[in-house]
Length: 384
Image 1 (cartoon, helix red, strand yellow):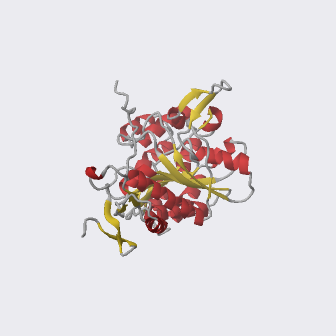
Image 2 (cartoon, rainbow, N blue to C red):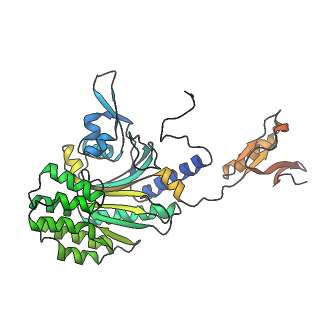
Image 3 (cartoon, rainbow, N blue to C red):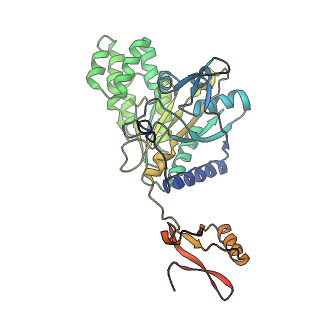
């Protein structure tokens, strides 16, 4: 076996891509900061019980597991940072009012989320804790829109859904846990034949409502169709009102998808995905997950979003990188002062090391520092 080969779906990030990702990270964290979101840095490893509390079966399958050599207990490498942030809010900060937190870091997945996806996303996100109303969902979605704009991604759109619709239909229809899981898989895959088979033995009202969900997709007008097609349950009425408020936010185009159950075992209310032009997969995911805080012993409403910096860097238009300045190797104090000033102004200055002149000009340099009349000045490289 070749020692330099990496496992499948893992890759090195090389310059200049690494620089683009790091700049996006800094830009987004600063955007979060000025909106009042405080940065937290959870550990890569936690005891498995804490890491997976309230997150559902899907995250369990995606989590790498190992034994702690100190305690003998099972540990997990985080596959999602958001549950860790919920734990921090519940048990470390323990604030009574609204808390806004943000984070950025690597996560590891036992299996990738798509054919062209990595198993080591660089996750960055923002969360609001302590507010149950639609206003916090609106704030989070607006922050997502501003985040995409800050990365140069234009023309994005949001798909929004609400898991309470599906849950209400199942609860009122007496659907058991095993059958509910089959329904979830059929709806997630938009598998209408399978959905028809699974619902055959159900009461007519429940079956008709479930069969209607995949057809309830489109702009805000789909909500009126949903009110006519779905049972008059209080939970469904409240969910449709929330979706109506979100679809009228006006920040970017919004589509409603009542069969979207992404993160169903994890989320408790509104769910959403952001899509960019020309990109098949969602560039960001989010939603409300009130039940995770409850699982930690402190019921706290929560909503947030996350995205992968790798995906953002691939999706965003490439910005022209400023070329570097080549400086000669010298002990001249005037040269050292000129280099310090240029670097303080944000310029990249590369000092050519002695003995390498035959190898040619340093890569990415288009200018050079030269001495003229006792002053060090910058000129185009190679210009006489």
